[in-house]
Amino acid sequence: MSYHFSCNRTYLRYDLCTIDGSTVLDPTTSTFFTMDPTSPVHVEKIRPYPRKYEDYIMGQIKELNLVSGPSSPQCTIRHESPAIVFSAGGYTGNLFHAFNDGLIPLFITASSFYPDGDFIIVVSEFHDWWQSKYAEILKVLSKHPIVALEKDNATHCFPSATLGLIAHGFMTIDPTLIPTSKTLMHFRDLLEKAYTQNPILPSPPLDPKPERRPRLVLTCRGNDVSSRRILNQDEVIQVMKEIGFDVIVFQPNRYTSLSEAYAMLNSSHVMVGVHGAALTHALFLRPRSVFMQVVPIGTEWAADAFYGRIAKGLNVNYLEYKIRVEESSLMEKYGKDNVLLKDPSAVQKKGWPTEIMDIYLKQQNVKLDLVRFRKSLKSAYLMAKKFMHKER
Image 1 (spheres, rainbow, N blue to C red):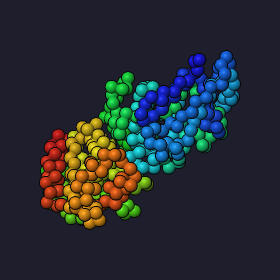
Image 2: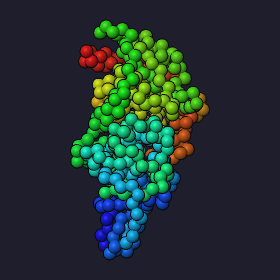
Image 3: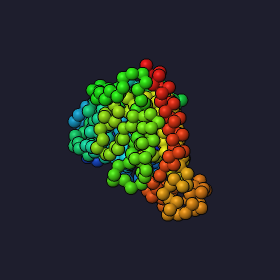
């Protein structure tokens, strides 16, 4: 039996349902209807969020319905463009997840199905703050007003629809999997378009001469966060200045303007920060600039998979400063010979259970060895100066 829609559930990260003909959305029941007078009623369900492998969070994503049958609701609002439907729930409040599980997969899905950019964003579990925070990006992705399921009572008709988002991996766009061969650089181009339409001018360099100092953005954890902080931050900043950097301390929070963050990082030469969601701002760095990630013990895999890939995808010079046991606050609690510190890979061989993850991510701060860190900063400085020379 053939229907007007089909669902592919073979992917690790996501399910994808496509409606190849006219469909009516009833937002009050989160249901897409297609009419087929000759067939019995057929129902499919989908949770349109690309973390299918993670049972805990998928259980919190609202299920949407696809129904094919002899009847369908009447159409109130008729659209001439197709729909891409996804959830803004899950981990979307976290900046990393907003991009990794939302905006980048949305870009991939749009590039795969609607490369002309003519589609309507339909959002389940919509939040006003989400639309406000990412408004500039959403407007560049689609020129049409967003349809929010929870805020709408009218039925909507679309010529076709795609439910679910395609994800290629953590912070990754694989051009071989997209008909238009898009890459992370193309996504960076979209960010530039979004945040330079009404640009916030960066402050001018302190010295306009060619020998001006490179601008370094030190991305810090907020005061409301108790882990992955640099305990000797003042001394670290002093070393940065001694090496020759102009230092900007960037402490983002949920209310931080992304347009202001973009203007700052897009005019900087180096970004440094401890592994965490704030490093998602590395997407705003220019190609050939410098990104240094401070990697706490036990976060080596995640550091590379989440943020190292941004640098590789954007052609940014990437450095890792992997802290040693004596630089971790965990040493005081567990002792330097504990396997948690001596061999974290052995601890993680059986997976990444919450109790282990919390030790490395929620209990750990760092106190950087200033002598060793200075050497890494000098390497970053040389890369930054080379980048500045090419700017001229």
